[in-house]
Structure formats: structure tokens, C-alpha cells
Figure 1: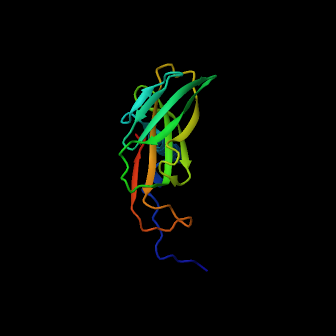
Figure 2: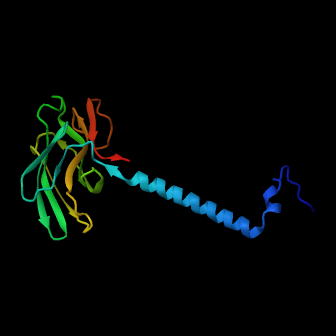
Figure 3: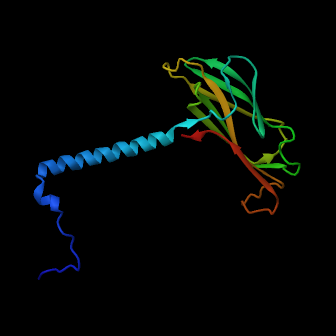
Length: 191
């Protein structure tokens, strides 16, 4: 019994005129080109920059501060063997949050290590549990960056954050409480 299909694709005209070995080479070259292009796109997307953010050169054991629109980061760089630590506090900038903003529903702090051009070398991110704004005065953070011996130029530290500040205490079930909220953030950009 023969099987009739309503439409069968016609063989490619190249299949008759191109030797099989050359066809296989051309397909392998095409596959390699696609893989390299995809790899290049993924690598390009993975690079981040903090050139647009406030940043400061690493200075060991010196109190430093970086102010952003909604948060101020005070910190100290701690030299360690084969790494560097950054220990500090994040506090709301005076007057930056509206008076009704009483809770952090979400707060994420990012610490970036970058080179002189702003290219991110390493980053750490910290999510905090919901809390009342100002209960602690400032929110502590500390991180460690392992240094690459090839990074001989000056290194910089910068910060980022994502914040949802709300009028009312967040509900445990995640339901909307009907109050006002402010969603803000600053951070690294993908190149």
C-alpha cells in the first residue's frame, strides 16, 4: 500500500549539483557561524557597566561614602588575602522618600567591583526581608570580592538597589493592601 502525502517538499536543486562532501563542509561551516554568533551575542549581553553610577576608587581602611538618589552607602574596604572585603551600611537619603513611605516591601542592594572604564568585574546582590523604614537607621551589608591577579589597574566600588517602599505593612499573603507604593532602583546596565 502506498502512502500519498498531500504535499511533499521537492528536493533542493543543490542536492543534485553539489558533491555530498562539499555540502557537509558547508553545513558544518554554517553551524559554526551560527554558534559563534550566538556565543558572541550571549557574551555581549553578559557584560555590564556602572559607568553611569557614582563610584569610588578602592581605598583600604578608609571610611568612604557614595550617595545615590534614594540611598546613601557608607563603607570601608577591608584588604584580605587574594580578595577585598566591602563592609558598610545603606541608609535612606534624607528627604528622598515621600513622608507616607513607611515600609520596605522589597529591598535589594547590589555591590559592584569595576575597572576604571566602569566595566563590572564582579557583583554581589542582597535581598532583605520586608521591614519598617528607619527601624534600623541603616541596613548593614558586607561582601568579599576575589581578585584576579591580571587586574592590575585601579578598581572601583559602586552600588545599586531595587526598592519598593509602601505606605502600609506588606501583607504576608502578598495581597495588595490598597496603599500607595514607590518603586525605584539604580544599578548596572547591560552592554
